[in-house]
Amino acid sequence: MVTRFELVHEHNDYIFQLRTKDGDVVLRGLGSDSKIMTQNELLHLRRAVKDESHLVPHVSDDGSHFLIIKDSDGSVLARSSKTNSKSEFEALTKVIVDAIDAPIIDLTKANKHRAQAH
Image (spheres, rainbow, N blue to C red):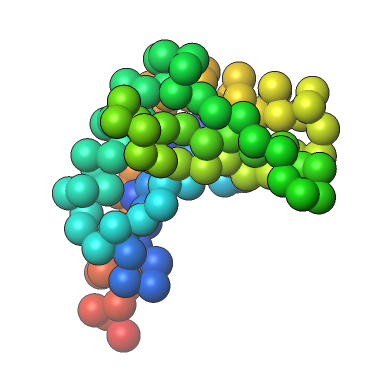
């Protein structure tokens, strides 16, 4: 398996997510009821990640670290998974930045065909 972005349809929302070659989802978009809007958000994410000022680190009340990626207008595009330490967070951020040009796999089509078969 290669690191890739996936378009998925969950609970009536289209969501993009970044899945690593190990199968871990490390970044997820917020979701939309429109597949086209979700694809557009992914394009904005690819642009935003190239500017470090759009990568906003956060620390939860429980001490875990996560990343918020914001668009040029300040709106949130995606959120990373949580990590237990700052060093894990820095490694996760590198994975996300390095994978920004990863291929996009549309899993909404596969799920639609599966649902029609039943």
